[in-house]
Image (cartoon, rainbow, N blue to C red; front, side, top):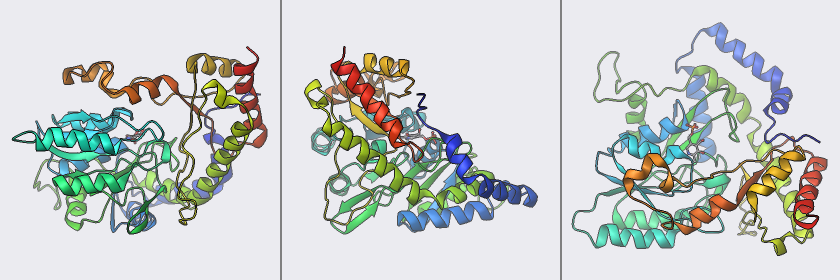
Length: 391
Ligand SMILES: Cc1ncc(COP(=O)(O)O)c(C=O)c1O
């Protein structure tokens, strides 16, 4: 059996006629830059995520960069985030010559650890004269929200901005004191990515900034056209951070299917959970993704399984074994950011963030997508059992 890690062609086959009709509508209109499709997508996603404003931009990376620019992050400012994330989270900080400051993750969720974050902020803010810490970027890794309540409490205490990196978590939910909220609706400026493999992915790059702050939304709308509101007059220096109309049109078609696709992802994850629990893999140091909590709270999308990530002993050997069996898997991420060459100037070393380092040696993302069949999942789990028990 051959099981791809992700099967976007199967998804395309299921929506081909809708997509092609929409693309040809945009081409007939010859409106490719911003315009009605982008505006409509912004409205639809703002409503879905539960915020007042959404600003379509060129990628998730540019959503982070333009958000930090809009917040006025400057050279020398410090922005605290996790080292166990995609490069862009910290890359956006460094591109502004601000300093990424890393805080380790919780073992279970792989998201930033609020207890360690609290300690770090005491050291960086309370124990220092001129604190440079300006913002926090929690990442909702794999589709599960970071502990936003604790993070927002710290942000209020120290007067910091929060930029939720919800690139992997469109539609995920989190239980706050005010009730259930969607990923991207809790921080000040929050971002989504529409990279093709994301749960809501375009046919190219794209991203979105979500906010309840009207002035920030207006600033971002200028930021994405070089800092201009009136043609050829520039109030500040922005960039070309626009979302293409064609991408917006594709995303609007796909958005109609999003809840159904998320439901199917959760079903696939539950089926993996069941199969793995019936196995004796826990004895082999094999761990499942965090299980849904708050079962009776009405929360629906506790985890949207952008990735279904297990923790495995002998991970690299397991991955190679599965490949021989025709099963593609992926490692997000093999080297935490504090150990990346490009960040060596920050002065971190091996051992600084033990949970992130351990996670990078153990995590393995298994195929998960709405079109994945039970037979395929049975085969994947049987192959994993063979690796541990038949060797
Ligand atoms: C956590 C995280 N942040 C930021 C990004 C950047 O998004 P994009 O690839 O759209 O630039 C990604 C996407 O890969 C991501 O996973």
